[in-house]
Image (cartoon, rainbow, N blue to C red; front, side, top):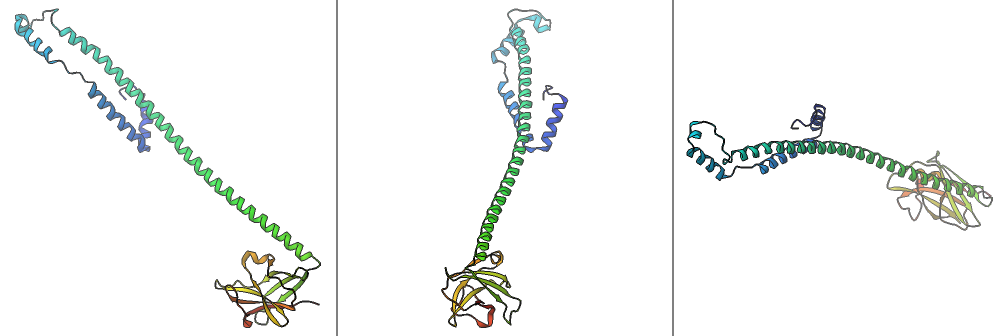
Length: 267
């Protein structure tokens, strides 16, 4: 640092250069800039000064014998003066360049660390934002689920609604489901109590037996949705309900050997 920086500052700079390639590259760039500046500021003596000096030496005997004789006409004092004024200017240039270099490196080092901290804070903010969105999404899901449960409770507790239990058939004795039917509004709701999860290409279908004939009441979902009341198609009259396992999307007629549950309407 041209002797301007302290040992502590030089040590900090060398440590920063070793840890951060960007700092090392900046130091090298400043070094090259200083070399270019010094080259551009170099002053070459004028050619006529050299010719004048040799002319004076050849014309003066004392100067040829090596005896120093002061001569006011010689331009040597001007050359000495130029050299004396040149040396302090280079010291000031070196000092200013060193101060600027150290200052720039310190600022780069500080800003680099601030940038790293900013990136860390930004990553933490993004993580918190994702967590907040996830919590908000779950909150909305729970709110919807709570509203659905409240609606289900109101339907079940309605005295006009008939509860139709559907136990498992002989082929599937552990299966169980329940239909809640409001004859006044003709609306039918289904509650899956226990049914095995079907394969991806299969789907359960509800049937109403009206005058001895099966009537399609629609397919329904399993998974988390099965724990709530699912709104099915309406029917004006029915003697019983049943559930069969059909191809995905439902069938026009029930597959009797795949009937899981069935139950008659009480009364």
